[in-house]
Image 1 (cartoon, rainbow, N blue to C red):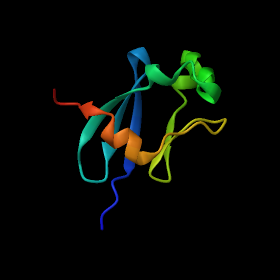
Image 2: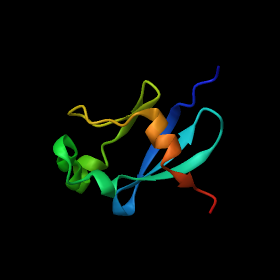
Image 3: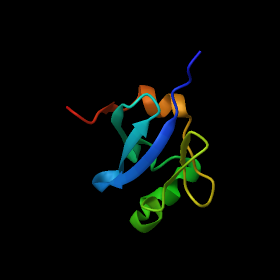
Image 4: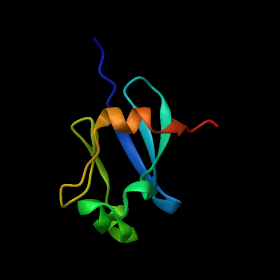
Length: 81
């Protein structure tokens, strides 16, 4: 079984992430739907949002916010569209 995981991430305008997955796909994930929920509210600070890194197959911010790699893959759209 192959698990789809994030290889790299780039912060984009409007709280979006450009994700490159280990299967070669590039997709865009919109985090704006989560910005008013729990510990994701800190992502409203654009400087903090831009500090995102790819780690352990997902994305992560300095204070531990992250998303499940499956959520990132399934709820993102192709970067080619």
